[in-house]
Length: 155
Length: 196
Ligand SMILES: [Cu+2]
Image (cartoon, each protein chain N blue to C red):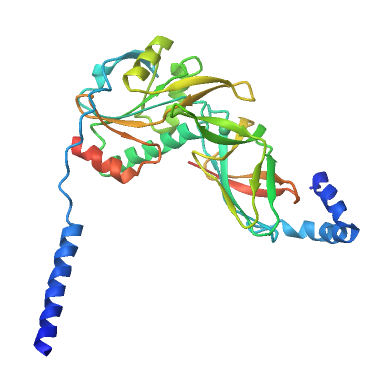
C-alpha cells in the first residue's frame, strides 16, 4: 500500500531518505512487531450477535521512536465505515461515545484502545463475524505506511 | 544467650503462624445492606412479546442491567461479563435460582424480536425487557438509571449517554448492591452466593 501523506513528509526530508524509506517500507510489515518505530499488539474485535451491525476493535500501540506519531484512522473490508472513538464521561455521571479526529501517540509512550475507553468503531458490518476468526484492519498513521494486521474476533 | 535467641525465634514463628492464620481465614461476611431508595414493581414486555410483571422475579436472585443493543462497546462488554459470571455459577451448580435481566432504554429499535435474537447469542436464560417509552422511563427512574438520547452518531444511528451499573437484587427483589461495569466477577459471585 502506498500512502501519499507519508511521501509528502519524506520529500521534505530529502530525496536520499525518501529512497531508503521506499526500499525499506515493503520489508517492514510482517508480524506483530513490524517496523522499528511502532509496536502494535493485543489486536482484537468484539464478537457481537449476528443481529448487531456495529462492533468495536481494540489494540495497544507503543511508539518506540523519538518522534511523535499520530493515528489518523483505519480501513477494513468488513465494515462500511470506521472511526476512532472514545467513551467520554459526562457531567451527570453517564458516558457517551465520542468521535476523535485523530489519536496522538507521543514518542516513547503506549496508547491503549480498550473496552470503556478508546476504540476502533466499525459501522455496518458487511457480514457477521465468527468468534475466533482473524480479520485484517489497516491502521493509518501520519508518518508511516499503513499497518495492516490481523485482529482476532473474540467475546 | 543461645537459649534467648532460640526463644525469640520461637516467639516469632508463633506470631507469624497467628498472622498467617488470621489473614487466610475467611472474614465473617456482613450481610449486604438493603438499598431502600431503589427498586419497585414494574410491568414491561419480554423478548417473546408477552407482558412481564416484576413479580415474576420474586424468589430469584437477580442480576439486572440496562443498555441498548446498538451500543457497541460498554453494553456487549457487560453482557459478555455477566454471561461469564452466570456460566461460572452454572458450572458450580449454583445458577438455578439466579436470573439475568437486561432492560433496554431504546424500545424503538430494541423490539422483542430484536432483543430475542441479540440475547440468545449470549445465553438463552437471559430475560430481555422492552416496553413503551413511559414504561422504560419509569423503571429507569426506579433504579436511578440515567440515560439520554444524545442525538445521532455520524452514521445516523441514535446514541445514548447512560450510566452503566449492574444491580444485584435479592429474592424479594430488593436492591442489595450496585457494581461498576468492570467489577471483579469473583466478588460478584461471592456477594451473590450470600443471597442464595
Ligand atoms: Cu464507538
